[in-house]
Image (cartoon, rainbow, N blue to C red; front, side, top):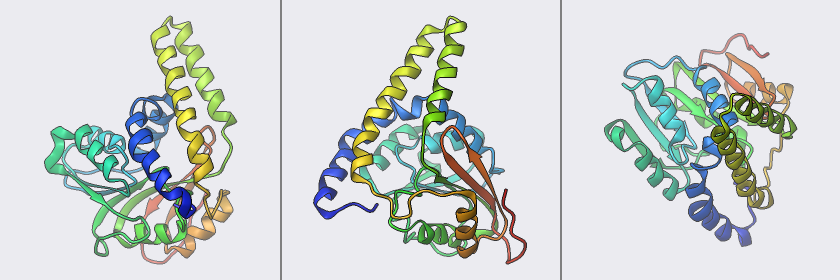
Length: 251
């Protein structure tokens, strides 16, 4: 992350001691988070025996979602926070033999070329010093024929609030007041958690549109990909298959 030196210690303390413990009870419980996670996981055809790399595994909620799709996989969950990885272990305690939490830097992944069948990276790009370098690394460790999905930020967020409002109204109309209240609490808590992040983290690359992202992916040796907008979360979902140099696909 591109953070000034004087704020680095405070930021890491915040992430490890406040953000990560609260994440599972706020952001990870929101309808929009779960809806996008389901959409991202559906882009990958998980198979028994797959070796999967989750870049930015955080507290392990992404890994939980993967195992719910296909139990018979080995997942390497990488993150720059040791405390987050400890939480990931606890959140996946029953799957310990199939989960390998690894402390790592997304710019310099500690794996050999072509080590994984799938690469999953959600809500990491935009917070790194060099998204392009991290994208190249993700492609380097992916096997030829392997699948990937990576999200990139576009900025904004008004549509996310609209999605939240519609979900809450839907639950109220069904008299599921407890679910509506839980959604409001999760989103409100997530908003509070992200205020310090907006102050500390200054993405070098900034935000993307489909054209800029397609150009960057092409420079990163990604040759078979699609780009799909998530209008609510204000993300671009880039997904596809690692192939030999050939036709580029972007929508």
